Image (cartoon, rainbow, N blue to C red; front, side):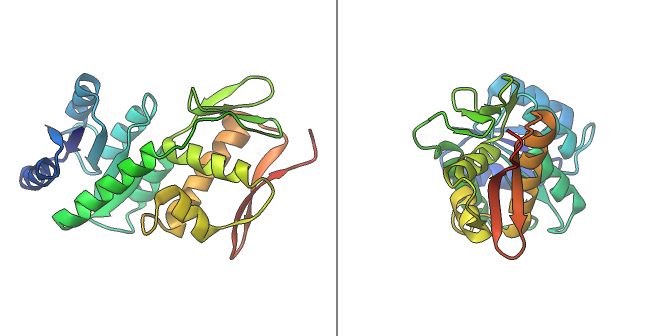
Length: 228
């Protein structure tokens, strides 16, 4: 399994590389944003460890360009846990983030958790709720007019969970465990994920009868608007 490490800190990149090699990964490295895209295209890694502060092209732009063409898991690296760029990265489709400095054990655990989530999709099945239909073979969702939008692994898992529990409010803690795994996410990450999915459903796919309702202090539900 290949891991692409993108960081202009050569010492840290070497440490991360050594850690992942010991965990059984084949490691590819890039030290600027432009090279990262080249290596991604040439080597098709299974996961990307992406620093936000990069020369030639920042990590956010790298994340955006990769997300436009692939659902490969992306873990962002940042020196600040409250960095606004982390929020932007999650909005762009990154799967997780790690704050520097971090331990080798933490890195391996987060990588394994993200890979586990991305592969744990269960039996692919087509499901419909209102005018939305999940399309597992295309990893996306379409409306009644057959307009399709692709989803990231996390967005797909969130929508699938909401459809399975249609019009029932799901506690945020249960959604976090289902989507990120125990201890793998938090309410802020879930909120950003809901925001991204809501934007795709309501804007990109133009669903007119379905919306995600946030119930303060409890969680989220997929609801019908009554306009079908």
